[in-house]
Image (cartoon, rainbow over all chains, first blue to last red):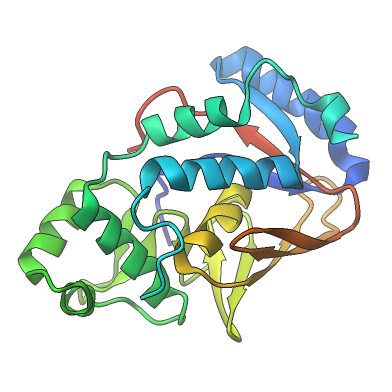
Length: 64
Length: 166
């Protein structure tokens, strides 16, 4: 339905997939030059919180 | 385990900085528009820009002008919003079910499920599938943190943009 032009390719992985997915991500990094990483869920949440503070500093948590 | 895998070359702020740099710069009105859209879309109904405009007290022409200038905005044939910045009414690519107050919408990727709950100030249950094993992964995201991650030890992969979206 959508032709997505906005994407941060971010996936949740179970613990048994980390090794195999890391290999894929290293290939992505090598081929397209974008930095890739795997974070704990809590670390990723911190990225999201920091993103909110940067993008919508005045309204993060605003309840309409 | 994830900490062993993660490359510590970048900090949390570095990641957030790279992603926010790829997004449009938002003034206060833009922030009100985007927040209102996420809040309305979480009810799993197409979002009329006129409702957004009325709720935040600005002309609908202004809302539409901003929406037309931003990437990642998807409308139906009536001009209503059906996808916006990490959230949509239907599945896009990977399936990230985003459940708020009994209503289900769909996030575009894992990171979206982690930052939108703070924007809408709601607790969200997220259900997804591991892209390797296809096993279900679920978590509850609150505005101030994450709990009930299943399976324990689940992690989040990220590809960090180096250019603006769109």
